[in-house]
Length: 135
Image (cartoon, rainbow, N blue to C red):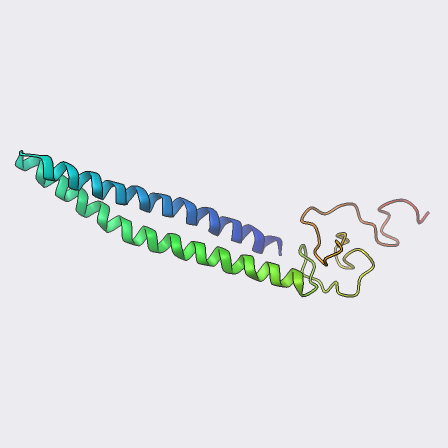
């Protein structure tokens, strides 16, 4: 479960970065086209056309890649939320529908809605020695 959350976060961060690069490439297309149209010099116009072609060839694939990462991150987010709603521990994925306030597998405390908090706390299982009350 922890690995799934890390992958989800990485996908969403990559989506934002790649979509940002796509927007920059699109801005490059606009600037190159504006420079090429306003230039009387043939060399400048040719270079601006080349820059426009390069930026256009980057814009589409970057946008597609960014959308792909975004969709993958959202799918992983939905999967982790559904697992939590189905009575699975968010930390280890163990079935916690019949619980005593903690996950029997990893000892993570269970909240009232059936979701385990992300940060684990001390082991409070009987015999686990978490609070010292067993001694």
